[in-house]
Image (cartoon, rainbow, N blue to C red; front, side, top):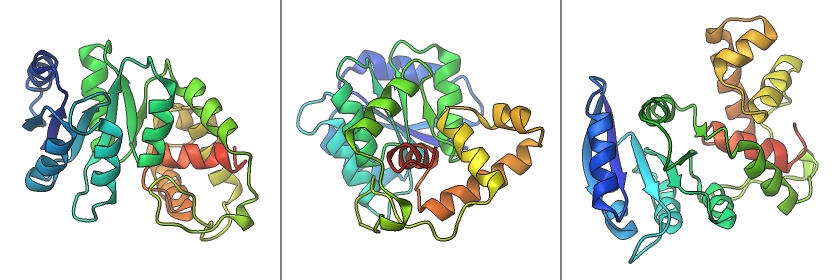
Length: 226
């Protein structure tokens, strides 16, 4: 069962998300929060697998709430920023805060369900409409740095030294990940099975020191790996 915490200051939107997710036998909405501060408290108390997080909220915005949640080692939830994408800078700040994905508020029910399942599986999710725009802008904000010069830091969005070099196949997988390809699309492009793709993705994340798929994609663009 995938446990979900809904965070948004609009009760009607939370109700809509709850109704959509409630139709799925493998998803359970375990709580709601209307402010960022409450989201941090509820995340620690309820220990959800996935959190859908609004950006603009009273008391504490979704970016700061995400940063605190990701920084807490006792909370293992993946956070998806749910946005209208009217402020690009929020998205870039959220990536650095450790968000595991983005979903537009006008997404259809199936997109929401798919996003929740992907995040619960550790895949991360970026809305197709914003993927390349976000990554291109984010990469442009920081000039590529040779991997050998990248140092480990405690920042959720910071890169770490490659534990060991990527193999040729892992490099191909990372390049396709950076192009916003799903595991199924990567498998088709490389003529390998999805299970094999998952293994390569796991190794790439480990070598990059990335928390999740989205962070790996950002690191790939930022440091010239893809």
